[in-house]
Length: 528
Ligand SMILES: O=P(O)(O)OC[C@H]1O[C@](O)(CO)[C@@H](O)[C@@H]1O
Image 1: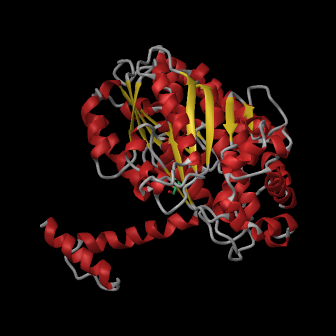
Image 2 (image 1 turned 180 degrees about the vertical axis):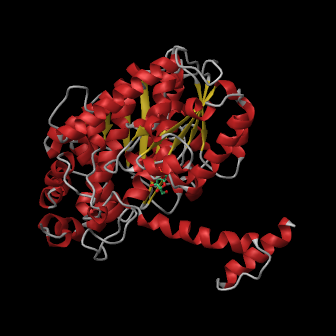
């Protein structure tokens, strides 16, 4: 496969970087009356409008040529076929297999498909029994609360989905505990009757310090508050790929729900990691979530590159980030229901693609993932949008909107949508009458995508998340990096283990750098 730099189309794009940065987006609309049709597409209930990017047909063709030369389609097919594309860990990457409808074949080895199907039906049976009160807590009380203990991928996906689909929730109330500072745990404990609470300990590794500390707290709370010998058996459920550690924690591995090493944590909400979702909205709605993601998977697998939404979204992101050096991206959903989207995408994008060596271990020659951040609109408009409109950095924005309001929700959908469309328009058009004071002028020509969902349903939400997963994959495929390991997060964990006794102990913190030693001393002093 050609390196990026050796590809003619990339060289041509690189040589015209300055011109592309200056390319007038308004001018592109003037030159092409059908630009919206030519630079937008719909798949799985989602419209992507990328016409407000400084990309003309030639630039798009060059970007597609780069995708072809980097064999994005071949890399995608290798992932879907279960080849061990996570080479540094020798693992397949098969979150797409989790979303194949029951009975569907051809997307994963039969053994994997069987495991997925049997786990899904175990989850569905258990969730149904808990939801209708057949399966109770240890003292016979119905389960009314669920505490999901997990962090990173074992937290963000279920949280995002449950916040988004809260109007559909008709099962137990779900509380999330991720941090080890005790705040979320105290809040959850304060709202839950222990005899009516199920604790989910969700951790692929079952070794994550925060999760294990919170699990110990929860188990101690249940033991002291529920007068039953079988409280842990009935009210604590482990969800993990590491059954040995379940036993070490004092739980029965036979009762645990499995996940597998071929599912990355940040890609795992579709597995038993999403059990809290299923408990809250029911197995049928959970299946709809999977079906929406699968619809996007099929589109990604089958649509030609030039009309393939994740491919185009990935190429637009590379165009902005790698080519034009616009490395910070904002994502602004116009509904509070998607308020968790930017936090979710931070893990998905930055943990996957925040890499500086390629698959062969050589330093990359181009910038990979920058920062992705955001907040909901309209509140974000009254916070950081000033910088988007007039700041010195050009920040590409993904606007995410929903056409049909959620049934029963009040508010002013027209005002919301008018703001959504007006912001991308303002970023593009700018404002600059010659007699206007400079402080009031907006330079305009600032790029954005608009992603419009027909409605916020389990299916469109599943499709939206899958869209961003595959966009992340496309970028990694073009850059030649492995999106599925995350060794960078390990060093801090190791150092934290080393520092704990130094912070706790009375002895001088020797063998650490001056700053850390100073911080430890001041911390001890102030802590008293
Ligand atoms: O599910 P686990 O093993 O507890 O890991 C939690 C999270 O920790 C990380 O390893 C690093 O932050 C993530 O990749 C993962 O989602």
